[in-house]
Length: 567
Image (tube, rainbow, N blue to C red):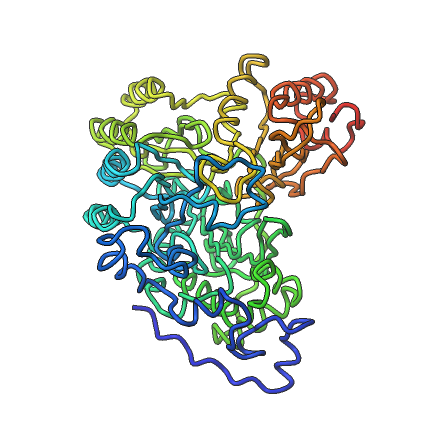
């Protein structure tokens, strides 16, 4: 076990003045712990996983109506469950009805896969649960989890028991806690790897997340740890990230970033300028989480993310307080890692550093089914594969193949609709859950994204450069709208005939990586869902016709293109 947490400091008046928010925000070490809103009161009364016992002892036996509202939301988030949207509610009702009015008697359940690591046996169990209890639904997420739908409260104990047989669970899948830890999907095998982060991810998952001190944070907390040169975990938009870095004196380790996040107030993470060795990553991670716990803003939910604290403090103060109060020693200065210039994902066939191969395939927008998960587990085991990984781009990767088995597996996966050679359009399109299940959504996204990929392939064939397309059902940017080449934010819009219909606000030219930037919002420009295919085809054709060279990226063209070519 890791060491016990240090006792909270008693701050001097000077220290409080140095660390307080511009206005009182409910910072525990500044303003005290008196709850300032209903969510904070509920968490103080009973935060953590105690609700799991009530599910087993009461709710699964007595049914949905036995669940009190304060357990249903927010406490069920701590066990990885949200009520899903009623099927008879359209997007117009999202802004006018309460969550209680919009919710169904069924749940979305999020199965946590830290580092995206899953075995064929685990995949088979998840597939069986999907088939037996979730109407065969299953979706890979951009946080490397698997989500199921149509879960009844009566079935939850058996689902948990089945997951436990293969060392899986749903705990801390949602809620004001450290969420799943993103990790490189090819950790331990990639030729591009600087250092394998798996030991740090495992230590955090097994020895730190079980502690009561992390059960009540101001809001959700997102972590990414990757030692791969491809920087394959979207570190620029996480609360805390550790990215592979070669120190000229100390060797392989990690560069530390804090304060990223999207939603309605997007901010890029910032480097602290420190290099962290592998064995110190869990300790430093815990220090960052504790700062968030003690100084994060709890008064208003829409300002209760770490990014707001980092923006107000600045990275120099954040580093100083992390070192002095939470780590207990000066961190090592580190050089900024080189930015990976190409694709960050792992689609296709790649040789591993041990001479074997891995195959990365893309289910369109991450959609799959329980029966298919069972078949994929069978395909893997028949070829001696013991490791499968999910990715932040909703892909699936099969590790450890002998060379003579690669083509056979790729062909079998192609028959499943999972291509190792997808078009650029299918490779780079993602969406959120959308109106089908989400109570916050205004428009349909997942099926709309699948249809859009089909139409782009039919009308344009393929594209010779990456083109990230994101469809999001609301402003919260679960599908990373602001950092996509073509970001589409769901809205109810008025069509040419005056009808209120599903549509999208358009953002163009967003990016992570070499030149991170937010997408350019086209003032007053919205497109209906029905007109989306024609619009995207038109913009991509304008780009192909007017780019200065085959190497000019879409985002660079957007910056100089006249407005009429973007409409």
